[in-house]
Image (cartoon, rainbow, N blue to C red; front, side, top):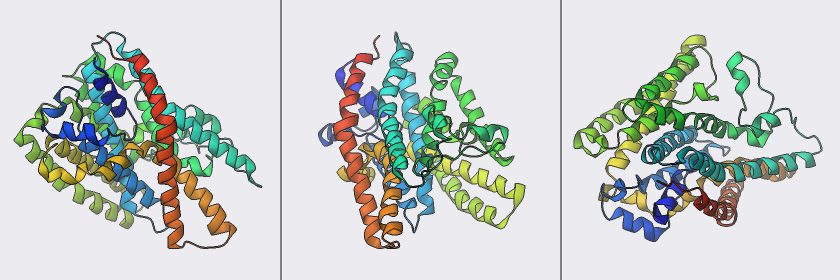
Length: 377
């Protein structure tokens, strides 16, 4: 396998976005649909990751932006699509599983544990530090696991609570490659369909959406979409995806409103349905972008700023809440400044700077080690 292919898959294997540089992206766009046929890469997806990251950043600002919270569901669909694509392309190669897990560990673990160490260090400096009882669960990506048996999870450090999404992914991907390679391309969609329905049922009877079996439909939908890559090239597929988006997106708002009007079990059912509708909407969106990649109508998804945001979005997701919380501690609570507009700008700018520096000096050098774990025939 060529070095170019290795680099493309290195980027795709990220939990959150990584983009190619502008020059390589421009050459990929030049030939729609034939473009990434060999490596399964769709450059416009980098921009979708950037938009998802921007939504999460806005959601965690004081004024909030509730729809921004759904950026994690877009991340799940994108991750399921990209990772499953890598599995399907390389599953027959010698040493595939060893290479897959090693490459994923190199991408995910370094800055996750760096961020966790930063949080612990800052907490130890507080006059009244938070409880550390949740720390062992963060170390092994099993935060919130107590929800499965109805217990209350120990509190996590306040500015690491958003790591639940990473726990879901890291619990999903140990078994997913094994399942896909065992079942094969023609049958793995059956498991994906089961994982699409299961969280809808479990959330409706009270399981938290913050654990794998309560929030895996996006990953499953992304995987199913990757298995249907040839179908995506047909105009009939685009029409059906557009219809799917047109039907599912309004349901997100209808179910959300209905959940507010209801109580008890009925509210749980509507909330669960709304989350499924959101994942279906994002699945349709990703499918439409993949099938139309390189088309002039998607020019805005090839803008350099969005691609750059996609490139740093994993670090951006990890660091932003740590930065927000600590800037609030200094200015909002320490200096009693309230929530001025300039503090919001400072939060976003600091998060962007930290994520860009992390990518340049930490993540990118570590990713070069993936060359030692190539997918070889």
